[in-house]
Image: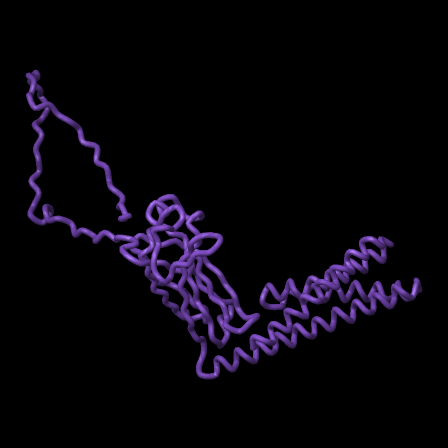
Amino acid sequence: MKYTPLVLVLLLTGCNDTPTQRPKSTRAPTVQAKLSDTDQAAAPVEPVRTPLDGDVTITLDVTELSDGRVRLHGTTNLPTDTKLMLSVEERARGGFQGQSKCSVAADGSFDSQAFGPTGGLKEGIYVAEIVMPIPRVQPDIVKKIIGDNGEKLSGPLVENSSLGVTVSAEKEFTIGGPQAAQSQQQRAKDRIQQYREWQKKIVTLHSSLQAVRDSNDSEKWGKFARQFRADIQSYQDQLMEIQPVSACFTVGDPLDAVRRMFHATAFQKPQDYNEASADYTKSLKELREFITKSESTQ
C-alpha cells in the first residue's frame, strides 16, 4: 500500500450565486490587496516519501563521538513512526552491550542515543544492529502500510520467526588501531579469570559453612558467623563490578544460595536449608558451564 501523506483540511465558507439587496452601510468598502509577483511565487514543494516502494532497505552508519562513545544513524524506507531497536555489542563474550530505541522520522532517517560507558568504548571489534520489532507492537498507522502481520514486507532483511515478522540489519566496526582485536582478546581472558576467582571464593565460603555447621560447636559458629557476615557484604558490593550484567547474575546466584544456607542454619530451619542447598548445586553448575562457554568463544 502506498503511503498517504497528511492532508491539511481547509474549511471553506460557502456563498450564494445570486446577491440579495442590502441596505446602504456607512462601513468602509473592503479593499483587496494585490499580491506582488514575489508573493505569488509558489513555495517549493517537498517531495513525498513513499515507504516500502519495493523491498525493505536500511542504511546503517556508526559515528564515533569525541568522548569515545558511538552513535548509530541511517535511513530506511520503512514507514514514518516505525519503532526500532538499536544495539551495540562487543564481539568478545562478556564485553559491552547496550540498547536504545527510536522511531523512523518523516524523512526516513533514524538516530540513536550515544552508546558506551562514561569513559568511552574500549578498543576492539563491535557489532551495531538495528531491528524493527514485530508488527504487533507497531502503531496502527504503520501496520496499515506493512500489514497487520508484516505480510507486505519483503526482501533479504525480513525474517520470519515463531513470534512474528521482524526486519534487521547489522554492521561491524572497530574502535582503536591495529592492536584493537588483541587488546579485546586480553580483556576477555581477564574476565574469565575473574569468573574463576569468584567461583573459588564461593566454593570456599560454602565449604567453611558446611564444616562449622557439621561441628555443632557454638563457639566456632559465633566466630564464623561474624566473619561470614563481613565477607558476604563485601562480596555483594564487589558483584556490581562484574560485567556484563548477565555474568553478574550468574556469579551472584550461588553466592546468594550460600547466604540463604547460612541464615537457615542460624535460625534452625532445615527445610529452608535444603532448598537453598539445592539451589546452590544448580547455580554453581550453571556458573561452571558459563565459564566453559566463555572460554570456548575466545
